[in-house]
Figure (cartoon, rainbow over the protein chains, first blue to last red):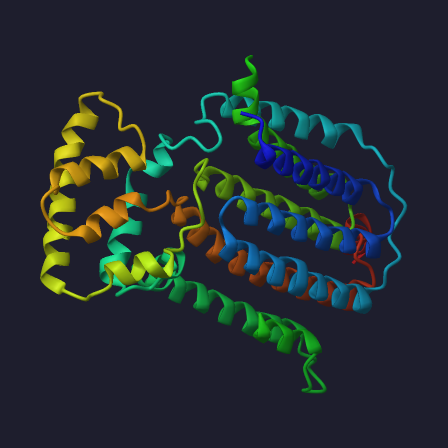
Length: 191
Length: 183
């Protein structure tokens, strides 16, 4: 049961938990943003070990790259002096402890990690892997096939969301007097 | 609690811990950028929760190796169609069995049944059945969409923060509320 995969798993998860706690406790806002980038990159690594390379690439590029750049741009425009806060605030901690306990109770019924009999794997997945071979004329990546073809309308809607967000960013940041936009708009287009 | 159950569930627990850390950052700090950081951490944890459910132990990424794909690509269409129909029939035969409570062991066993059912025809089907187990592609697809939508909402939120800073001169929640009360 305990193999090298479990060890990698445990190592990455420990690093993830440590990074998240650091983000919660660190006072410097700039450092917190950098730790968020590290957090995204660690999750990308874990996704790679969980057989989701496409998501790992996207998370590394978008989560660790573009999001960090956007945060840093915002920080440059707003100033990095944050009010002193107490390192530990009891009421929010109580709330998240109770919520977390309820969620953990909910996991007790869940199928175990890596279980091939899990309900997730029963209905659509085998037919997607098998059908895409016939339908896609030898396209090797099943994720691409599902994303661009079987769920093509979903991806089109996603593109519409990005366009709307880009327009919204430009409209929000536009000055009434001088028409030149802030740099954030063009970065959003790149996203 | 047995060791097996612990090993089967601990990654859900870690993911819940990460989620709750993000939630804590959102609700405990008044700084708006800090809240968005917490929201980002929460969001990434949700991605991890989905991806971890898609993993099959011993499986590999859902990318068909070129050799297998070539063996299955349209070199003769009618055999492929026949195989496809057989596969469909196999499924419809499988379903009542599953409904009757007989568990489908796993993907490999299911494919092996298919091979037995279509024992006489093409060799291509046998190659497929011998192929690797693939992890579930569907969570990956859903999370790809979610990541891109997530960065879009983050960008809008950050633009709003920049705007709030221009108007109020601060991004601390209590100071913004104080300014609102004074006006």
